[in-house]
Image (cartoon, rainbow, N blue to C red; front, side):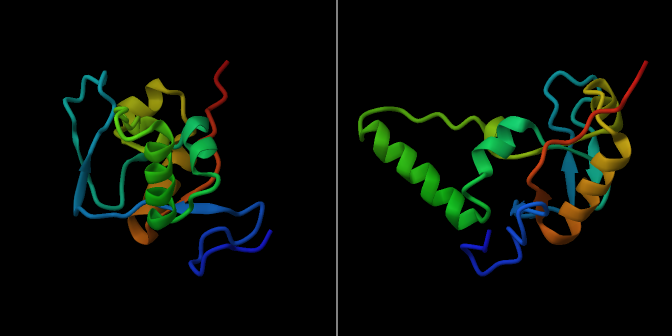
Length: 135
């Protein structure tokens, strides 16, 4: 499948990605139920949790511009008097501390690599984060 955009996302069908802008020098654990108290996560570290919900939603919107178009279209489809509440958990991956990533049973190695890549490039792989295999 050829790219519909001129960015480096959607390189090929097996190595697709989407963009999530990086604006801060540090982040915070975005797990609301984590006991870390929204721990500060220094740039280049942490664990990225990409859910299947995010993958499904971002299939057709790899860039921020594509995402904005999809969100605006969704709003228009609802009608001008409907309220549109954005579920960020369905649109963006979550940056987690080690404790939260472990609690979600994520593959820590993959989640850490994804986070580091996102911090460096702003790109996130279009696939869910694999889980660890515990017995």
